[in-house]
Length: 284
Image 1 (cartoon, rainbow, N blue to C red):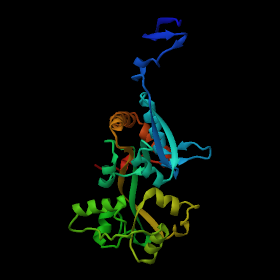
Image 2 (cartoon, rainbow, N blue to C red; image 1 turned 60 degrees about the vertical axis):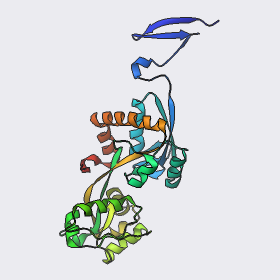
Image 3 (cartoon, rainbow, N blue to C red; image 1 turned 120 degrees about the vertical axis):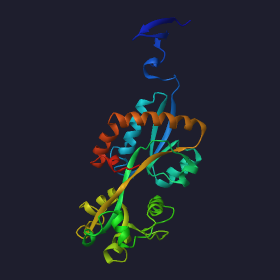
Image 4 (cartoon, rainbow, N blue to C red; image 1 turned 90 degrees about the vertical axis):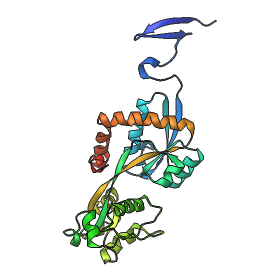
């Protein structure tokens, strides 16, 4: 017959059964005693957002933010899996994964499939890759729009399409000509701008820095002829599988992320992985 004994530990009354301490000082960490494991999928080679390092560990800005969120939520435990972009999205829809992180922007189409929490995980800084010869006349999105320049076509399924559409709806006097494209390689986009076929490529700052500015970049040969000008930061969110239990998690996530933003954790991680606070580019 097991021995049952009540003891006081750290000001909390805890039941000791057979020499085993029951609970995790629940009053101290806010847990209800039941820990739910959530399966988190992340892109495995989208550094520095999400990737698997040379030790086989899941890391990157968004992964580390989610790890910080997990620490604040004793009722949840996250289990990470690095995977392809395609498997992440299919797995989220099917319920194979509970959470997916891939530097994702909000779109109406995605919101129909997944739960979007209220608060962003990070931000992606977007702008225009242009010819260096044009940098005096094209300094921002407004000057590009007024110049009547031609933008490299964007797929309507790409979240960048929505960003330009939104800009045009607010600047009907000088909209950017938006043409659709089914597919093309980044190499084509940079070459088209250099050749004068188009005047700008709507490009993510990180992509430009890694592909063109970095000496090891695939298109570094264009570095002396191309430059990049900023537009703004687009917030990125974790995508959450749509079910009742995960709606509850989304609320817990929002509470935790607000605390992490307030205590400086998000800006600290952003500076570590991006070299700057990407939230400074975000305008409401």
